[in-house]
Length: 439
Image 1: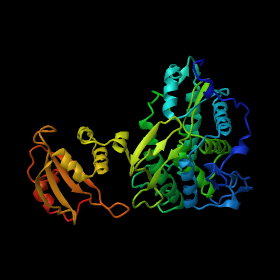
Image 2: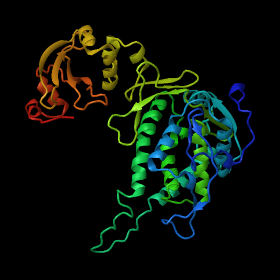
Image 3: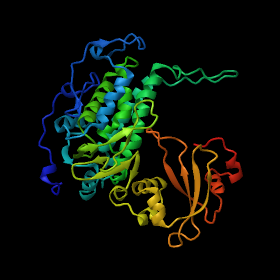
Image 4: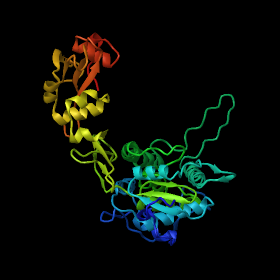
């Protein structure tokens, strides 16, 4: 590890008691100035009527939160930017090392997940494999086992397994909780929308610029929010109770999520990445539960201290050139429909059609889309001989009431706009003409 810059090594070695840095597993007042949560003392234990007589769990009765507030708190944690709280993060991760039977590691801080991947590769940290070193379980495998076992136990408390009894004429009993029950609402209104925003949006964007470490799990810190919010929220709302051991592990994760970004545990070293310095989103159109998507029309949607960045427009992750230098040549080489559409919208459809020398072959009203038209163009021989592009108007409106236009590649030599539109649905142009409305 001598090759690791001294500026990346942490000098903080003193552990602090876990209770000092436990976040809004019990409170949830968001401090926008710090991108974190103010900490509060936990009130006395609360007995849930759902639990057995001997089962207690801690509940903050002074700061009872609704499902919507729990979602909002965790969304704020997932979107937090700025420097990590290194002391808190290191103390929490060290707790996980000890629970897995490993000593506290050396902490190495890097400015971004891509920098972490490069450091791991350069220093051969993953060379020994993620599971065992000789007959000894690696720190990575041990920590993963501790976390995953705890998640399974908490999930079983929230969704108890159904007994299986099979006999003639017997039908499985209905679920213990109907889809409209409070636990189902918690999953639907906390976990699912956060998964859409964080797991399927932000994390995907960061993974695009972060080479994977083969065989190793990346822990996402603040971007573990979907499952953490669900388990934390169900407990805080009085819907479930966990064992003291699982409460402890949950609180450790809450502390990590509130203090830092992605991290990678190895036997003697733990690589910790800073949070983004900028993260831009917009509300997802027609979202019911506060889902958001990555978006910035001019600058990176995600940016890290070392300049590593992710560009995205209306949730579509795009190459930098789409924002900074869109050209017809680059657009025509791009095979991804969404990226191509985003780039064309940057220069405008009229300009693209003119500069690409597209020739209009056929145009008609779109029978499946009121106020929309279907325009079939031929590409110039220098781009694709006999190539065809169908320009359509999206059937669904955006949040601002506008509709996007898409240029869809269709079979070479097509001469009918209706036939081209039908082909995109796997039907004939005649059948497409009978549609009442498409989406």
